[in-house]
Amino acid sequence: MDGGFNDITVEVHTSVFTAPAVLPLLTRLAEPACTSGAFGRDQADEWLTEQRRRAETDRFLIAIPFFMAAASA
Image (tube, rainbow, N blue to C red; front, side, top):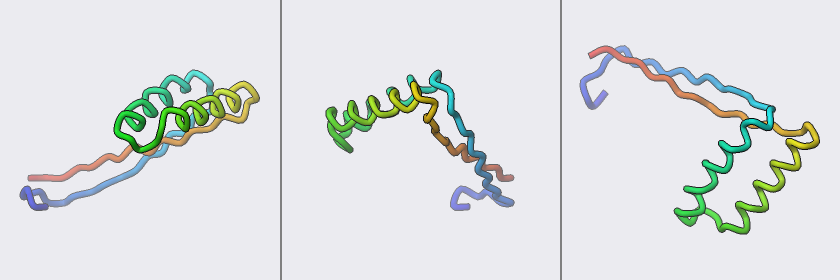
């Protein structure tokens, strides 16, 4: 709105994944959080180990929201 846009809409679509193939995404998400100091390496490693364990026992689930915005100028 501050940029002069009108008729602004925002939608959220959430994708749910249960396949172990998504595990590398979690690693890529955890790395910046460690680097920024949001949590420690030990905590991240423990969490990633738990996610791997869940994947091995068919208990893995991750939901990722995708926000889509549109507007006219």
